[in-house]
Length: 127
Length: 127
DNA sequence: CACTAGGGATAGGGTTAT
DNA sequence: TATAACCCTATCCCTAGT
Image 1 (cartoon, rainbow over the protein chains, first blue to last red):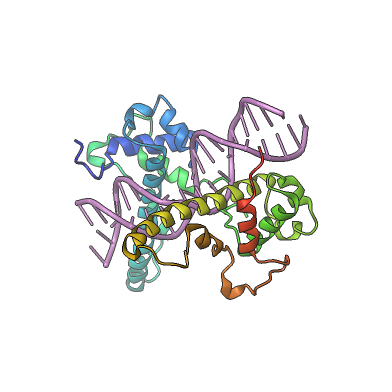
Image 2 (image 1 turned 120 degrees about the horizontal axis):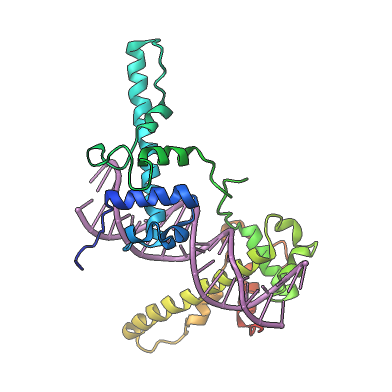
């Protein structure tokens, strides 16, 4: 409806965005919304919307790293030196933007969002 | 470095650009960056960068004119007819891209940026 | 080919809504 | 207060025309 001041992102849109980044690269927002593979899932989004959403998703991970670092730091004081280093970056591997409940192991784009995201986070950004 | 997507212009660079335009003319971007007088101040800039920067410096003044026109219009309703017409164009004379605090009356290029800028703004643009 | 002009896209800071 | 969504605009990119 018109009254929607904020148009909240759905899990489907987030999937399409992440898959689009996996295919075209981060920063190629216009390419993503023009790609017929993703366009139908991003009908009400502009290239700017995609950019802003991706930034928010990255911030989410960044903030998680910080709070995890804090949590782990506290935990380590208690546990001292255990093996199996469940490091901060490993925690990020478990981050996903589509709830597992409504997400079979493979999404409509051939891989789950968590995997795609992680892969992209580790890829150096252009320019 | 690679990470710097946005390379913000410094006051020094803006001075060099404006002085370069005063000497070579607007649109002579390649001449300006090749001029040994300005080149050392524009090391990380291309001719395209100069063109783009000058474009939004002009826009800045244009937008200021508009908002000033609006402000003055409101003010004039109140003040009615006073003398000393602090007109819109006079306001623009005070525009400068180097803070006065770090800018003596004369810059390294022999005149202050505000003057050079204003002079150039009034000069008809080629093409 | 080198350059410029102008349209268009992106990055990052800032703002609003929740 | 925190954060998702959105806005502003300086900077950067693409490319037709010269």
